Structure formats: structure tokens, C-alpha cells
Image 1 (cartoon, rainbow, N blue to C red):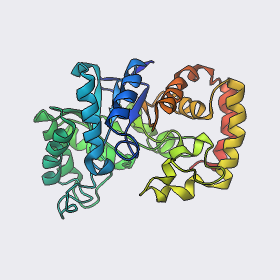
Image 2 (spheres, helix red, strand yellow):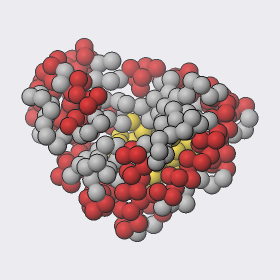
Image 3 (cartoon, rainbow, N blue to C red):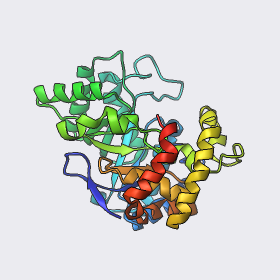
Image 4 (cartoon, rainbow, N blue to C red):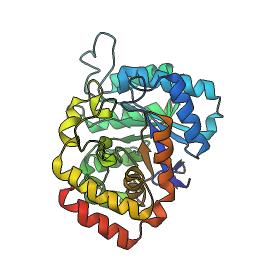
Length: 326
């Protein structure tokens, strides 16, 4: 496992990391989480991604219990959370739903820290942009979160390049903590934002990336070519919105062609897709997900495939996927 700087910060994160979206609490209990996090850690993974909204807060609880049982030194791992959608037992109230206002952010961090059982998060993301709250208010609230010792770095997820630059400029003018990283979706069929929209931000402000969905929610494994199998991500309650994309005939046909590329490289389709994302030097870490240990082990073996992605192989992959990429 190699390590990369998170943008222009001094923090180093493993090139592959482990996330909890969909799986923790829904498919993975504390025992399974502990087993997989231990295996990931032993393989060199030092970044574990989470969010307040995942499983309505229970994902943080599961990960926290696993971390407690593993008894790792706090300096040896990095943990994140994200805020935007709000969380409340009786449903989010008006000032904690789809927002990044100061009141919500100031209180949300305390709830997440309590659920996960930590004194601080290493990374905190604004999970989506909030068009109704001035960016300046959000920037001050996130900078204050760091000043209060609740987080070490802050960033964004699925923000436009223009909004990220605006936030960075506000922080720069006011001598506040600047956004360090962005967490965008990035895979073979979803490229524009990372490769084009953010292009000037990498050198201009030193933006780092913690990318999600390298397997396009499972599409790039090839298992959705005959529908949605039982036990898969697409079959999880509340994930029905993914089904249309997972059963796209043209993309599934492309996956069949990609399997021939993977076979020539001696790797699995999943490993090829993950390695392709990791081959982008702008990516600080590729967040992977798994519902069982064997799946995790297969994904992590993608580190051995990165060096095999020669210009000729990349050109072959591009011919198959670029016509279908957005």
C-alpha cells in the first residue's frame, strides 16, 4: 500500500481506503466491521470514511464500536464524517435538514463524535452544497469546528468548482481554515467533474480528492448484467434509486468488454476498475466498500494492478468506456 498527501496538507492517506456507505448496520454488523477493518488496516489502509446520514447515524455507531474493540493508537488511523441531510429520531427539524447553517453544523459534530466514540474527526465534509446558506457562514462554521478541536481538516463533497473556489477565497481573505479536500464520485463512467471541472483547482488551491464509488455502486463488477441479484447493493432497502443505472444495457455491455482487459492483466473486474481510479495522480485515496471479507480482500488487491495500467492498456480502456462516460 502506498500513501499520498491529502491535497496540499501534510496528512498522508492510503491510496485505497474503506467506507461504510450502504454496508454498515444494513449489511455489516459490529463483528463483521471489526474483522474487515482489521484486515484493511493490516493491508495498510489508514483511512475509514463515514457520514452522519449513513444508516441514520448507526453507521457511525458500528464503526465506533469496531474501533473501540481494535484498540488502535489514535495516530495510526484517519476517520471522517459528513454533514448536510440532518439527523433526528423524529425526523430532522427545519434547521437541520438539507443545510449547512452554523447552528446545525455546530451541534451535528457533537452528535457524530458521541456516536463514534472519538474526541475528534480527522476529516469533516460538507456532504452536499447548500444553496440557501451563504457560503461565508458555512466556511466560518467549519473553521470554528477545527478551532474547537472537533476536527483537523474540512472539505466538501459534490460541490461545484466555483463554490469550492469561493469557499477557499473566503477562508483565505479572513485567515480561516481552508477547505482541503473534495469527495466526488469518480469511476470509469463518471469522469467530467474530476478530470475537467476541477482541473484548475489542483494546482491553484491544492485540492485533494477522496473519491467514492469506484465500482459505480457495483455496476463495474459485472454482477448486474442479468438484473439485481439478492444481497447486492441494488437490492438493499432504500437503494432502489440505483437500479436504473445498474441495469443500463450499454454500460453492462461495456463491462463485458472490460472483463477481457482484466483477464489479460490477470486481475478481477473490480480490481481493474479500482486501479483505474487510483492511477489518477490527482486522487488522494479511493474509497472502497465491502459487505464481506472476501470482497474486501479482492478490492484491496487492486494495488497490485495499478502498475500494469500502461498507456496502451489505458487507451484500450478509454476506447470502451469514454463513449458512455459523463
